[in-house]
Length: 70
Image 1 (cartoon, one colour):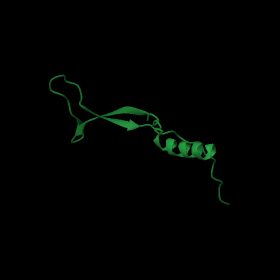
Image 2 (cartoon, helix red, strand yellow):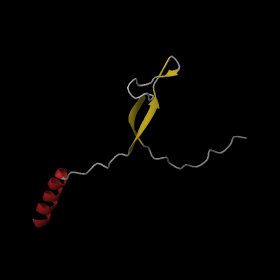
Image 3 (cartoon, helix red, strand yellow):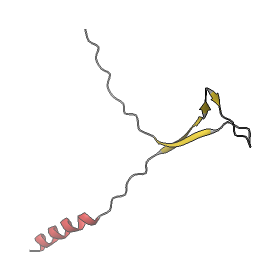
């Protein structure tokens, strides 16, 4: 009887365990803004404007080489 109660408690208790999601690595990528093929400059600072985005970094998987056909 104790084994049944223990199994039932473990089964119900395991549903409430919260697993932490691994932190995703991101990096900031900036690209100069261009209009009509020319870089756009900020009138106040005189620097070129940039468009920046946060991009996820993916792991590169090592694989085997594909054999060449004869």
